[in-house]
Each structure stands twice: as C-alpha cells, then as structure tokens.
Length: 251
Image (cartoon, rainbow, N blue to C red):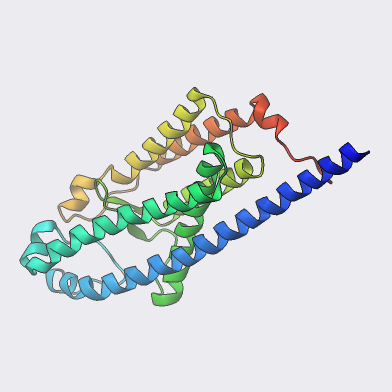
C-alpha cells in the first residue's frame, strides 16, 4: 500500500512538473513572438522607404520583389551593416530558442521536444502579433521572407505555420512521455524531412535574390519533407521505451 502511495505521489509530481514546463514554454514562445513582431515593425519602418524608391507604386503589404544586396548598398553604406546585423539577430534568435529548450528539458529527448514547442509557438505568435500590429499578413497565402541563413527562405505564410503546428504537436507528445527515444534511423528520417522542407523554402532563391517575383511554391517538395519527418516521428512512438513511458489515465 505504501508503495502504491509513493508511486502515485511520484506520478502526480511528474504531471505537475510537466504542466509547469509547458506553461513556461507557452509564456516564452508567445512573448518571444511579440518581440520578433516588434522588431519586424521597426525593420519595415527602415526599409519600406528604400523599397518604395526602388519599386514605386508597390503595395506596402507586398515584400516582393526583394531589395537586392547591390540596391541595398547603393541606398547607403549603413544598410549593408544592418543586413549583417539582421543575419546575426536571426542566428541569435535560434540560439535563444535552443537555450530555453535546453533549460526546460531534463534529457536530450525532452530538450529537443521543448525546443520544437518553443519554436512553433514563437513562429505562430509572431504572425498573430504582426497581424494585430500592422494588419499583415493579409492572408495565410501571403508570401513572406522567413530566414536569410544561409540563403533567403521564402514561402506563403501557411507553410511555416504548418511546420510550427507539426513541431508543437510532436513536441507535446514527446514531452508528455518523457522524451522521444528515437533510434538513429528515425532521427535521420526526421532530420532528412526537415532538410527537404528547407529545400522547398530556398528552391527559388536565385530568382528571388535577383529581384524577381516568387515562382509558385514547391508544395510537392514541402509536403514530402513534412511526410518524411512525421513518418520518422510516428515510427519512434512505436518503440518499446516510448510505449512504457506513457502516463496512465486517471493517475
């Protein structure tokens, strides 16, 4: 009887601790999304006048065609420095999300899950707050510049949102089960799927970097990457270690 009470106490403590972790991830992801949106508002205040001079008559809601590096330098030497600073800020953003994931998890698998949740919440919150602040994006199919490292990532807003929803869902499943004990080939499948998704985002980089309007998004490549990554995750959930870590209902 004492053993059962101890077991129930430990289980209850783990559940409370997990909800505390998820609450912290929620607060961090949403607040960090607001911060990212605020930075973008400031950046647009700087670059929209330059874009208007280069492409007069362009709608302020349209980010394309992009300002080329040459046009940016011609607009003023300080702009090249700002571009380098922005690339550094993007790298720092990912490092901050990774650092929070490391702090939130107790082992490698939990840390990866926490990072996935934080990243997804940050990205979705970013678009939500940007919509509230400046009315952008106009729709989920509005094109956006996602990252600049190592090449410009572009795509309709719905594509990174789908990635973020996938990350949050998989991260929560993993976190609530103590982390995902994936085998090497399952990790490789998830990583390979992520790489394919990134390829879909940079597929048209030569055209967009040269100042062209984006070509139709490569949905087949994007969806193939999502499918590969999700298949690797689902396969990992079938591992005996993951099945045994499930929290019993009613505990």
